[in-house]
Length: 255
Length: 232
View (tube, each protein chain N blue to C red):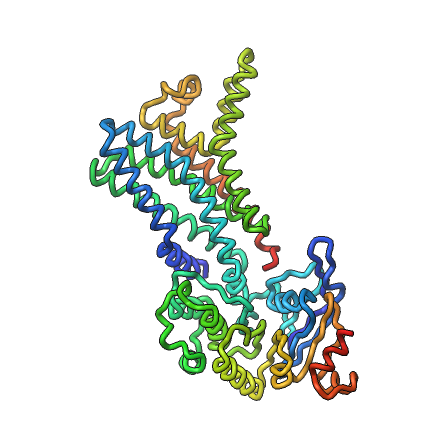
């Protein structure tokens, strides 16, 4: 049953202007970074940094707006012989998959066209895609909790701002405030807690640029071969956490 | 038969249903009437399992609707505001619902003709007018020939010709023995269609009985006047 729902929801999403916009956005920025820059590694890092700022935003906005726009459709599906949990999972899977397809396809085509097949950029693109299920499940959760559409979208923007900028600002403040104390391991722990930071660090480690991240890079060097797997695991943990919370709310929600 | 047993539901501090009991008898057409915000749509959504009561049960043919979703197969629902994936065509939406239900629509051609939708079948839902969207809602509620129909203001937004055709269709369905539950504010339509009336205000059932019972108990010949009596 979820497969049938996913098929139609995905088909609808892929035909939407949103996905077309996301596809062309990553297609043009990847091409611009590769064609205008001289250094391939720098182009991969620049594209990854941009993706790690924009993907959480697109995932949060698309999932919250999709949920609000399709509330009546969700109600209609619930009047059919469909289990609530299946419907919830199908929404999450189709939203995540459509974003992953839009991002990966849009980014991969210029990379492949200009560089051919290269393991480094494929690995980095996959790493970046890990953030999509996290922020999609979070976006759905926010839309489920907040009935008011404007407040829901505002909340999504606030969450994006926290993960993308405020969290790092807070870390920096902690580092400066406690600079006289041995807080390196605590700071590393806090850094790894934010999935965006973790994936950014893994990307830098993967492309051999650990020097530019100071003591965190030096420490992570010991675990560089395990970082990809750790990023995948932590991303899955966050996605499952938000997904479980979302499914609890969805099961009891009035439509 | 649909039975609502001891339904309790509140929204925040507002208690809507406190021990609501209702029976919708098989083969009867029941109009749910009441002022705005009286709980009509919430009542219908409770019957459909969209609103989950804090306490109580909704039984369809003796089975708890919230515990077994397969009973949704018996109910055709036409929402007040039909909304479907924007980028799918009507044909694709029909196909999707067919796959979700795991059954073929029995009366597709008949209803496409009745609702004059044949030229619109390959248009995306996003490009349809409000009235045509309403027709799509009616189409999906009726093509599977379910024994129970739940309709939320079915004639609103329809052009007079389609509204007349749909009303005639519903009268025939009623004669075929279907159980129809619907919300309406149009008294002429209620008088033509309904056998029974449930009148609610602020979540409480003020009247449940046949149209004749209502007229007799209020001493009015016209349904509109009888309903006004209930309000005052």
